[in-house]
Image (cartoon, rainbow, N blue to C red; front, side, top):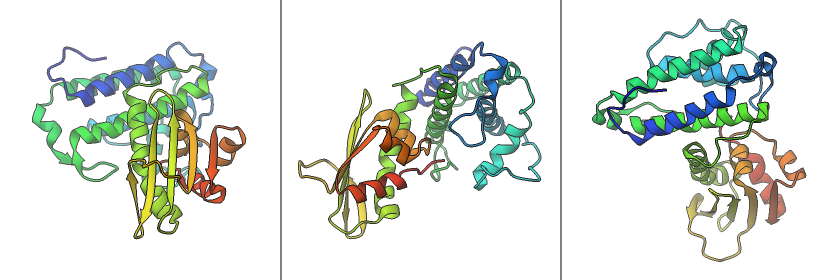
Length: 275
């Protein structure tokens, strides 16, 4: 997917890994499989790939399609409004052509990034999480593309792409957002502590403590938490990315709550920060 490398910026390597896995997931699937629904409301497998194409075409400096006159119900914010025209114009394009376009566009992006001067990755620019160095912006592309890859793989019944740089980035983002979830969305009283136990190859424990109205992540000190949530790493990120309904996850035993059950349920219902 790329010609001879000129720089070896890790963020670019991570994009290559994830984009290659996306292409592999969609390789030689049947025409009907492109129309399978995914965990993203309103989007099929084809739509997921079309979205990834649209973002990279914008980053290549290409003009977007005209805005939609009528927005579908699943479009609920400004980012989604920007994404949807790129998706809409490909809804009647055969899936194999969409995949070929994805491979071509990402190949162009990799060439552009490989030939970028190393100092270019230090330049601060816009990103969904604020103004950051360009390499950090690319990290947000890694986690976004990997999440959509998993949407595609779940719809197709083609598991893969797990426990690599994409999932690491997604889990790190979820871990880093839990203080916001607990402190701002749930806003329990001072002294409350919420422990997230995430199991799996990339598992981790995250304890969030509320003090003086602020929630911060702390190193677990062995004290019993007010409430504890236990989930495998896939369930954890799918809750954070709004890919699974909390009630369904509880009913299926994919997440367990101990301690203050009511508080634990409130935290679960507030975990979806990226949809």
